[in-house]
Length: 199
Image (cartoon, rainbow, N blue to C red; front, side, top):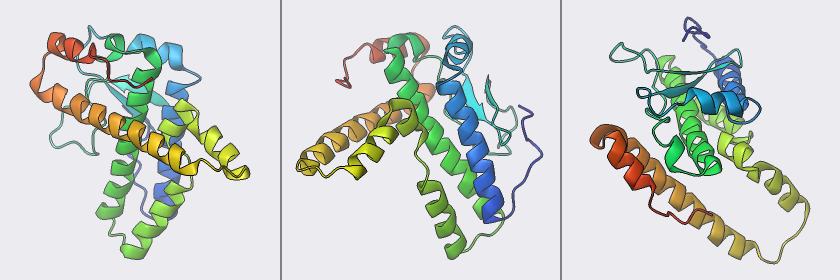
C-alpha cells in the first residue's frame, strides 16, 4: 500500500483532491477494472480490503498491521461475500463501504489539521457535489441527471422506493461489518444465502 502513504493533505482543496483521486481509483476497480478486481477478491484468502490512492490507483490487500492504523481502514473482508451474492449486489455493497471509507479518510484529515466548521462544511459541499461511488456503480448517477431534466408526477413514489433500497443497503452494511467480528466464513456465506429482496 504505497500509493501515497506519505502524502498528507493540509488544506480543504488538498483534502478534496486526495478524495477525488482515491474515489477515481475505487471507481476504476469497480467498473473498468472489474474483472481484475473480482479475481483478486478470492474468498479463500484472508480478510481483504479495497484501497483507493490519491494517484487514482487501487489495490486489494490485507489491512494495515499497525494498530491503530495511520489512516482509517476500509471495510474488512470484502472477499468473503463475493460468491454468496449476485455480482452486481456485491459490487454495490463494496461501493457503499468505499463511500463510507472515503468520507472517513477526508474528515480524518480535516480533524488532524484542525479544519473549523466553515472548512468542514466547504469540504462536505465539495464532496457532495460529486456522485457517490455507489451511484456510479449502480448507474443511479445517470438516472438522477435525467430525472432532474424532466418533471415527474411520481416523485413521492420514487422517493419511497429509493428509501427502501437505501434502508436495505444500510442493513446489509451493518451485517457485513458485524460479520467480520462474529461470524466465520461458513456462517457468513450461509447468512448471505438469505434473500434480501434487493432486486
